[in-house]
Length: 274
Ligand code: NAD
Picture (cartoon, protein in one colour):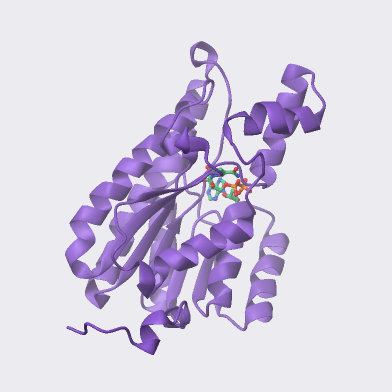
């Protein structure tokens, strides 16, 4: 075993060149930011998300052209285990491997417990939690075979602390932090790491919808909603960016992060330091 640092040990993302990264929910927001970051680091990509076919193709071809990366698109619905199975199958057929799995797809619904729609609870648990169980159980084989893999779960500060009216979301995000730890333990000896990123508020369409919803609910202008409602718990009073989330994911996938596993990494402007 080498005891002194080598120049190559500091190469940040070069090691990712040619690897295959599958990112769920990567046609918008954080997932799309992570997709750009991996394409820039030289990986091949599987994009996934819901949307009109022509828009999805424009997105896929755009990333392919911008970075010269090979990009596949899957329309798999993350609430459907059979659809997830098809996506993983298509990835293995096309690329022969999966090296990096980012479980990012997620939705939100805000309502008090007593009136929380039961079908929303089921859907949030399916998309925000169970989809990660299915992708992980199906992708691990390929990673173990190669003796290398990275699983990155996009959880949330709500995987560490709670807020009212987000019962399903907070339950799913706490649970995915638990799944992250179990995956890390089971895969540790095979060169596979599993970590969760726990963002505070990141400016994306999901957050924009919340600003609009809260502004209507509280009858407040959007600047006050942003500062006093959404970022009330976030000490830096600033939204994070999708580019920052991409940089964290690339770091976790790199060799420098090889011994980080089972961690839930806050990226929340100090929210969970309270
Ligand atoms: P977004 O709405 O911008 O993007 C969500 C993505 O998921 C889209 O690509 C959408 O097509 C896809 N998606 C939704 N339902 C799907 C389904 N059934 N099957 C397949 N794809 C589906 O959201 P975002 O803000 O980028 O959030 C991404 C992840 O980050 C979520 O898990 C969210 O909980 C988490 N997160 C977001 C924030 C934030 O402030 N934006 C903070 C913490 C955690």
